[in-house]
Image (cartoon, rainbow, N blue to C red; front, side, top):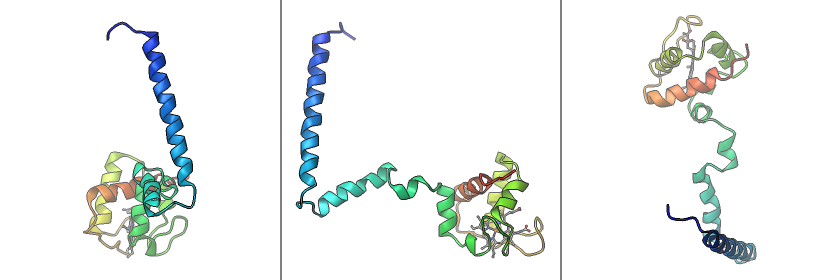
Length: 143
Ligand code: HEC
């Protein structure tokens, strides 16, 4: 870096200040009845920055489970066909080994851990997605 010059710094701050004022004026114009589709597109562009209210409260694993068939056989708090997710979470430590093992079980299906009823296989799921699901499940631990 060259010599630090406080005069330059002041100029930079002034430029920033001016930009902020210009931006603020532009925004308030958009609030009028001139708001059209392109303004809406700009607003919904916030989604891609992860700032949308629907994605911030749900983890990826929770979304994956909600969009798969899991909830027809599992509920968070009570047993249906398969064990409740809280039961599963309380049974297993949140270790890499268990996450891998349970992700494999979601993809391949299987029985014997909770009874004779088998778990349906999910061959279309990627290992990474299955692991996200398991991480969410194990986060429900209550003990
Ligand atoms: C057709 C019903 C059914 C569906 C659909 C289903 N499960 Fe299961 N699940 C079961 C049953 C039954 C068991 C108990 C299997 C056992 O005893 O080993 C089980 C067990 C599990 C276990 C614990 C495995 C173990 O070894 O302890 C996890 C984790 C799990 N399911 C996650 C999921 C996820 C995630 C989905 C969605 C992708 C899903 N399940 C969809 C029936 C189902």
